[in-house]
Image 1 (spheres, rainbow, N blue to C red):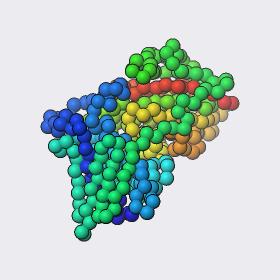
Image 2 (tube, one colour; image 1 turned 180 degrees about the vertical axis):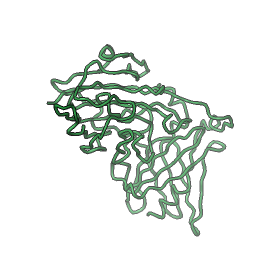
Image 3 (cartoon, helix red, strand yellow; image 1 turned 135 degrees about the vertical axis):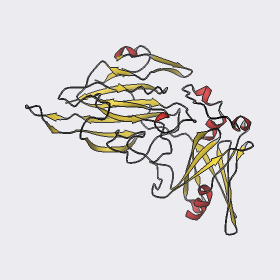
Image 4 (cartoon, one colour; image 1 turned 60 degrees about the horizontal axis):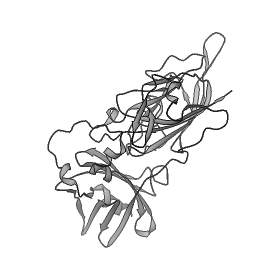
Amino acid sequence: MPRLLSLLLGLGVVAASASAPAQDKKDPPKKIAVAEPTTAAADPDFLIQGEYLGDGPGGMKVGAQVIAKGLGGFTVKAYHGGLPGAGADMKDVVSSTAATKDGKVTATMKHGAEVCTAVIGGGEIKVSAGTDTFTLKKVGRKSPTLGAKAPAGAKVLFGGAGDEKNWNGGKLVKLSDGEFLDVGVTSKDAFGAFTAHVEFRLPWMPNSGGQQRGNSGVYLQNRYELQVLDSFGLSGENNECGGIYTQHKPRVNMCLPPLAWQTYDIEFTPAVFGEDGKKTANARATIRHNGVVIHDDVAFPKECPGGQVERPTPGVFQFQNHSDPVVFRNVWVVERR
């Protein structure tokens, strides 16, 4: 099976698309930044990108992530055991690139007398390698805490239209599936220790990369940044989605594909200061990204870049504006003592 997977996605992928001529452009890529789901769904690359899951030979679970890179190009990652955070062996990851030509992306490789091909289309990856064939089906994973209701005593910072008043600079983004909170806002309420729930959605930006692809951030107490970024399929660093910016990388990259709603569930304890004003204990947090623990009681040695200086006072939430159309919804906080 390891050799088969190496053939499967160590080589590339074949992606079939009825609308592929639009992908065969020779012009330099232009920035695309789409928050509207119906607009993104009209892009053939959007229909190809995403997560796939199935059983390979011998019944071993096989997962794949297909990441759009713009103009018909893709990166493909394959995992033994399932998908990240759901059974995947993160030490055994096979990665490749693929490019669209004449309506599809084709890759074949000979390993001795064996030839492996893979075809993506219609929500499937069909794989053949020698006498072995199997199919991976496209899946749309959802966080188990998606839509979590605010418990009794919680402060609802954003539950829908009208709640933008709870934010300095608060304004709505109106899309076909609802009205959501825009970036570039700070909460009017400040908090010490808390449990918080935040839902966010990344835009479709296939022609961008790195820090220019769906960049925002959830600042805790306006001091410590929990990064928001389209890091789907990346390695999972401290400046990627789920990272504590410049301080801690997530245990596993749980970033879902763009335009999938995602969740952060945060348990935060603030820094402690003595009467002399000197810090005696670091702030700490346990964070779940899409239901999976990505930080377990990690310490913040200091504020993150761009954050306010640590002080023995409560602080606000900030949803950072990096000029990308990230949106937020269902934000609530339970204060703790």
